[in-house]
Image 1 (cartoon, one colour):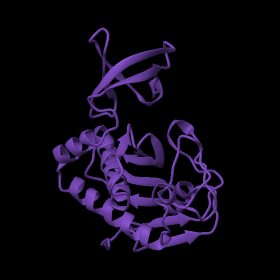
Image 2 (tube, one colour; image 1 turned 180 degrees about the vertical axis):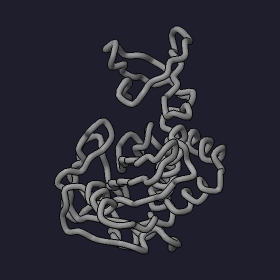
Image 3 (tube, helix red, strand yellow; image 1 turned 60 degrees about the vertical axis):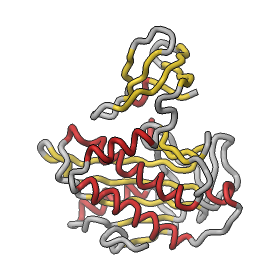
Image 4 (cartoon, one colour; image 1 turned 120 degrees about the vertical axis):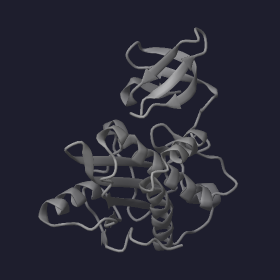
Length: 250
């Protein structure tokens, strides 16, 4: 599987603070082609959602950032890009773990069963009412065997060895495929695919509400265009919407 433009301009760094940071610095110095990738063997300051750090051993995982130019998306449509990338990474993992249940945990972590295998951080640079650039940072556990109890890796799940460069090439293919679908305006397809791939969708689960410091049994009904999660309280039947830092899965 080969991509058309993602990864054609490719730089590998043995170690860096953050591939997202390196790509942002590159943007300040020159015009950067869409699809440019900066990959690293190790990050000293890898980041995820909620300001979390991304723990990763050297040369055991995919750690990279991709530059995209989604100028066709308005500020109000930012979450569509997040959905498309999450779908791509979920499909990539599922390609290698065909017999496993691979889901997207809102907003864009990838889980195998109840364990996290991948995460991403998308940073958008805006111009007027549209997205000028998007820096898509992705971390995927590949060979790592020592992980948190809530995490896993391709090798842990399959007990197989993997060619790192081939994995990256395949990842670029899946991302490019979903990105081009997004660029074609197939927003309804992306939204439907994302929802059907969402961990806990239409299932009663336990959540922790950070503001009230209370637990709640609820069912995910959907995701709004701005990325907020809609949950139906199982006891009261009331529908609630939550932003990223307002709710946790239990």
